[in-house]
Length: 153
Image (cartoon, rainbow, N blue to C red; front, side, top):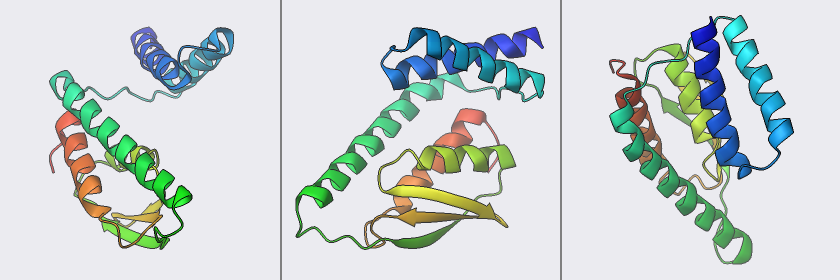
C-alpha cells in the first residue's frame, strides 16, 4: 500500500504543479496527500504506463488543447464563426473500463468538448460545433491511451 500511495502522491503532485503553475503550495500539498491517501486506501491501482509513449502523448495533448482553445476563442470573438452545439456519440474500442474513464476525463479537458457518460461502450459527448471534425482527435486520443497502457484494442 505504501508504494501505491507514493506513486499516487508523485503523480498527483506533478499534475497539481502543472495545472496550478506550482502555486498554492500548502493547499496543493494537502489536496495531493488527501487524494493519494484516498486512492491508496480504496486500493485503486496506478496503471502502469509505457513511459516512452508519454512525450508523444504530451505533444498530441498540448496540440489538441491549444488548437481547441484557439477555435473556441475565435468563436467567442468573431461573431461570424458559427456555433452549432449538440450531442454526438462515439463508439468505444473494446478496452478496459478504466481506459474508457480516462478517455472521457481527458476529452473533457479539450476546449469545446465535454463527455457526459458511457453507456454500452458508447461515449456520449457534447461538442461546441457538431460540424467541426471532432472525431479524428478522439480516435487519436483513444489510440494513444491504448499505446500508453499497453492494453489490447
